[in-house]
Length: 298
Image 1 (cartoon, rainbow, N blue to C red):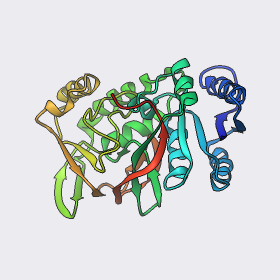
Image 2: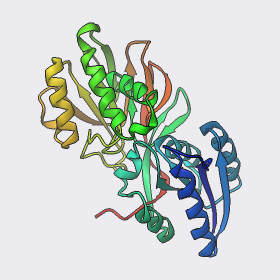
Image 3: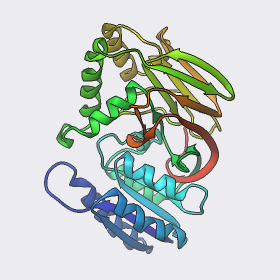
């Protein structure tokens, strides 16, 4: 089979492990008799340009080595094509890998070589013609992702928790966030803290925001958290970590096929932790449009 393995350049310090993981995958795939193209890029834009050409040429598997931004790029390129996406997690959050049952290290390489395939849904944003694999954050959650992206990578997955604590502390100084959410054609005006159309259980570096989300059910899970005092916001963060968010009275989870999100123009929605565009935006689920290399559901 024909593989492309996309990873960053080798460097010292935090973030350098992706290159080592990618090189190991290239060696293992070639040893197994596969044809492998190695894509070494200095930026996500460079990786996208090179991988788009390979997907158009019909490679069998695009191996995304790194964090959720690399995985999201691969999913966007491979949606509605014959190319499958494989994931070797080596980033800060690794939420897509975690949601699909792919662990860092030797396990991820074993999954890649076993080549088990699953079909999953994506979240499509028609205004951008962009596919997102895990989630779209578009309220306080987007501000948290933005802050986390600007902090040093040496903090690892803790960047999301620390960013959340900072944003929670700032709540008293900020006006309420007013939204209109049109869910499957039905509009609703509300004040809210968090708005997340989710396709996967995990977001934000391991936050278990939607444990029941199923990436193969043809539906998105819309998580909405109403305003709460800062002290309760910290409790909500603990509940997310424990996978018990839906039990809180300020939280609602609605399954839908589409949601249009209208809200503050200064908030830039984030897809899989990467900036997308300011609101308003539409998020619609596209069933079974992507092949992924992942363990079977148990």
